[in-house]
Length: 252
Image 1 (cartoon, rainbow, N blue to C red):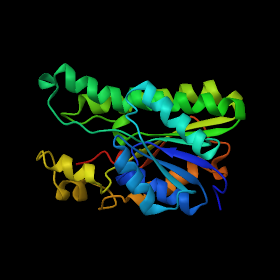
Image 2 (image 1 turned 90 degrees about the horizontal axis):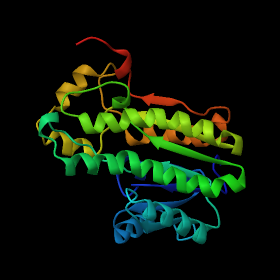
Image 3 (image 1 turned 120 degrees about the vertical axis):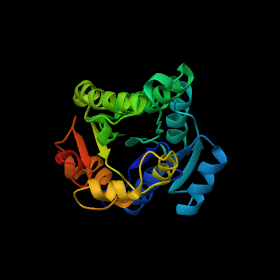
């Protein structure tokens, strides 16, 4: 098994991409901490996918540094160590830039950027003495391009690309690899919520996507597995799109 004996924390893993990553890691022998803002939800999901020895739930809002640190500490207390941190927790936000208020802006930045840094930093503090570890940031293709009405979201996802590079450089001497995974349009609950704004339709995505379909959470989980496993042992500081060719296409 590719992750046999490893311990992984996946933030925001009670649904969608985070849950798919947790299930894939479990299948490869890892023990996983499921995370949600709600402790009850995290524990419910953990029980549904594995035994207590393999899957465990912790409630924490990683947009607060103290919660991110507690998430890591409780994982180490429960499993004895941490080998992998997947910084997946995030939110979308669609609104014209001139109408964004400070509370909404701060909420997106606090979760999508600050929460990622807090989680990565808390994990690195445990990994540095071990002289090994893997940290994976979940970004977006909107970390490379822009779309109207997504100022806060695109700003945070662009920031993750730069953050990945610097963390990879800072922590490479300690045997810690840091990479960013950039999904395209994936069929998830978040996608359904975004479509409820009437911003786009399924037909828009299928017409624009070179492969003519949405990606699946399972495909993203496979990419995550590659980036945290020994198969990518000489890979750090990269931003890997899994997008069906979306970024390669410059047409209409």
